[in-house]
Amino acid sequence: MRTAVHADALSARDASVRLGGRVVWEHLDVAIASGEFVAVLGPNGAGKSTLVNAVLGLVSLSAGTLSVLGGRPGERNAEIGYLPQRRSFDPALRVRGVDVVRLGLDGDRWGLPWPGRARRAEAQRRVEEVVHLVGADAYAERPVGEVSGGEQQRILIAQALVRRPQLLLLDEPLDSLDLPNQSSVAALVSRICHDEGVTVVMVAHDVNPILPYLDHVVYLGRGGAVCGAPADVITSEKLTRLFSTPIEVLHASDGRLVVVGQPEPPAYHAHRHQH
Ligand SMILES: Nc1ncnc2c1ncn2[C@@H]1O[C@H](COP(=O)(O)OP(=O)(O)OP(=O)(O)O)[C@@H](O)[C@H]1O
Ligand SMILES: [Mg+2]
Image 1 (cartoon, rainbow, N blue to C red):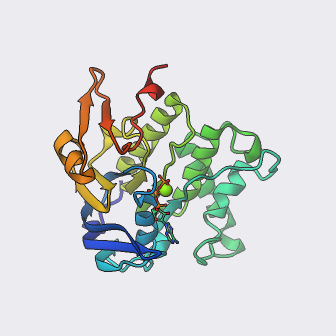
Image 2: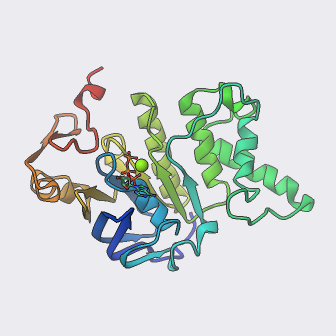
């Protein structure tokens, strides 16, 4: 495990973002230490992806401050692994999983190329290592377009990890996965977080698959935001205040949380768990 380099992986003080003349969220205070696993929750349109974009420096704050790995947003992007929302591969795509992972090394996004031919073997070793880490050995040589959604997700997580990031930003990585795959990808990300000392910020639609692993949650809603330990934030009182409407948090006997009320909070869709 690597030692923590940054005491504060992420820190926001009274941060706000406006887009198209409208406040997306405001008064966001966040303090995330290195190596923590954080969920970003909130209904559709609450500004979860906007927060990820702000961390990457792609969206500017309209007020407040945001520090990322000790620098300004955008400054340390080479140390951030990023998995954007809603990715899918064309079934006809012949590119292999290992090639997709390798793209993460080749600096396609941030222009920091992996040094030339001399280090090819090293690059190859790192790709193999990270493919193994996410448990994708069995299908990484196959065309990525023909492996399953859950398998593609692991390949993409490997791609985000291949440069040994300090911070992993995953925008709805569990989206479109079945429940067993949600659980196993959640467990995988938690293992990476602890074993590799990577800070993980995961946008999630349903908190339940990741609930056992979380250190913090950032809950966005109605322009406001709450950040804290899951048990302190996901409460009837806090969510009722955040959404200015009655919301009830029910605790199922198996440990799941069910949030009842309008507007629909991040779909702790009861029906998704009734199979
Ligand atoms: N470039 C833009 N200009 C104006 N408004 C924008 C822009 N980008 C996003 N928005 C708006 O900002 C709000 C937050 O969008 P965002 O994508 O961050 O939400 P989200 O929480 O990630 O939603 P989802 O759960 O659907 O992914 C939405 O109302 C969206 O329409
Ligand atoms: Mg989004």
